[in-house]
Length: 603
Image (cartoon, rainbow, N blue to C red; front, side, top):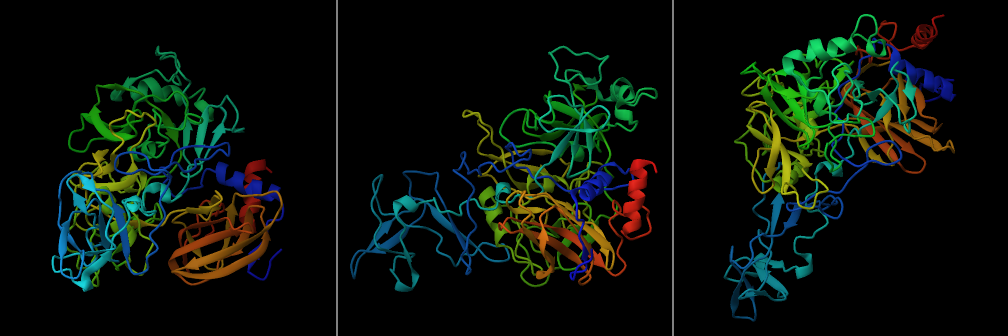
């Protein structure tokens, strides 16, 4: 069963199913808190898919492409000011005459460190007579001397602000940790995704189990803790709601550990499909508006945090005497107290989510990673562009974080700032996310807004994209490159010792059992560890390679569809991912599989 790549092939689907069931059921398993994508929409494949991207005013006709100019990025934007000279440019009509023109639109260039490059021509040019924009001349110039060394090509009117890379970098340009749920009955057993009757939903990304609501009729029924219409003051949630689920004699699902979710956990199930309430109603029926979380507001503990699914997932706090809705959760694990690792190169790795962050705000230093300058607030487009242009610590895949990723840095138990300022440099107040606010209501006045996170106290709210916020870039996450493949193992931020066995598991069985290539990526270098293995969703690999905290697995189907999972750590004495080390001996081996079977069968 072992092959030349040091791997062991799990040859039948039954074995894969057993391994997968072990992941689902063995109580000692711990999942890293991956951050689901904020992209909305859904299809019959039972997973979220991309929706359109958005500009300043409303919806764009699809997601923009990345700027491919190796020498630097220039994006074009349309001026919202009409009939007014904003700046002056000149063009040469003949050998001696320069004629003043004005611009309708402008260009912005960004250097690799994220700072704006003023050496690029700042303005596009349009000849203007009164309020009429004429066809542009063949050449334009940036000063009234008509210097040939400063000429730039004048774009056509049709090109104004419609370049294919406008607004690139928003969340829908990246398929990161696409949400994935399964339906369970009242005993915690899986039912078909098409079932119209289910009692729980399991989040395959976070491993959390949710007690879903029974759609109400507008009238509360407090004898039934599952009634969607029930509201509670925060102080009554434990006695009047959770106590019924955790009843000693008839606990819901035979579990006695149901609880209110943390504000982080509840925020993770917000969906951005453009409908209210902003949640997947095919898994979470009956959800309404404001839902209590378990978190108290740090500076005034007469208040507690809530998430508003009616207003797109706003996060705020309110008096505990208010009556809000509730939903219960179980499972998961608390973030590690030492989850943030300073890589001593100007970057921070979050071992709980697997994401890597800039230590300071944009702009980034050009040489000394400890010499961070003054933060520069940008409008939303500028924030997207600046992050895309960053090349720092030898990585060029930095991006603006989506709303859920950015909120993962918030510690609701702290205030001013509500994030770790012992490891992140000088947290600013309001930070842009890459997530637009958008609904399918054509009259919604908030469609020109994007989400930001207030790090002073942890609120999440909307702001016009033309306003400014501070910017901090991120990289990493499970990137579905093409074809919707989902990697089950290895999990983000897991740690593996060299010589241990790693189950590499993925979805994407195409029925034809076509060949799959599996590639180990470490610090930018690629090594094929399996080639020609069947596409049955499983491969057991004896961990090899170099010691590295930035390792990833790339799975490539014969069709060309691919996915990358990472980062995770590989080390000489690393700790094996605990959810696979069932017998807790520090390694994943055949004994773990046997032990897991014994636990499941009772033999």
